[in-house]
Length: 299
Ligand code: CP
Image (cartoon, rainbow, N blue to C red; front, side, top):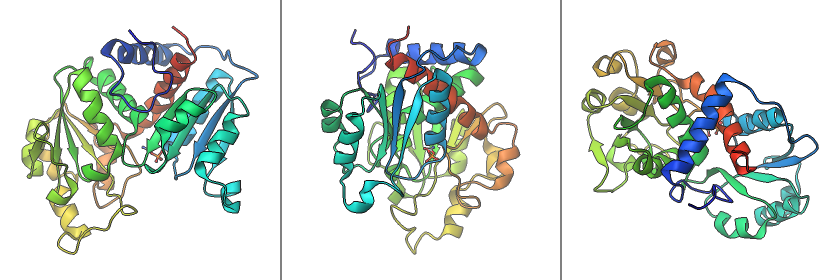
């Protein structure tokens, strides 16, 4: 069995045993915190695209381990403003010899190639539309904590699947972890994949599902077409107390965040007892601490 990937860029290459090790460690960290053991060492957190949950949860997890975060905020105050490239920025920070590099960037950046040039393992913290493996892992951790096991569970992903790195990572992870994924949304948001079940009707999808995950409509990657207004989307695919009447009383409602309130999800859903949105964020810190510890070689 290969060691836990030297870099974590996708979930395809991990075995079920390796994935289970992440979940077991996260479970034990949730019950009992470990003491920091990497004081005096650093981790580079390089975010070339906006982030709240992922960036701050990696930062929190780093503090739990005693790792000093080298925070690179691509939006301001770096030499990107003087024309330095993303690739050069990564290589230069790598030369400072952090233990790990956590990188969020667009999908034009060749992370596979860069990960072979840097001095330490790289963790994909959201790579354009290609994948967001740590988000899928924390989602599965959340489901497992609620259900006991994810095996055979049915997850309905609603919305902008085509532009969603979260959906891309779930489609990889579901194969190894044995849960089912179906997609639902307007045709222009869905991928063509004969192996993935599709629902055109939200209520039919909700009847089928154990878990419903609403996705953010990614306005920065495309606009809703005139044939599909925000109001239409909200009416047809939005989660609200009326649409969720078709959904199991024991089901789980997820959203990776950030939420477009009043488009893919109404604010009232956050107070539904099935809603796990803030629990996902809590689990994000625990899961990312488990990932960092594993990638630093802990058993
Ligand atoms: N879910 C997620 O990736 O959120 P952020 O963009 O805030 O990190």
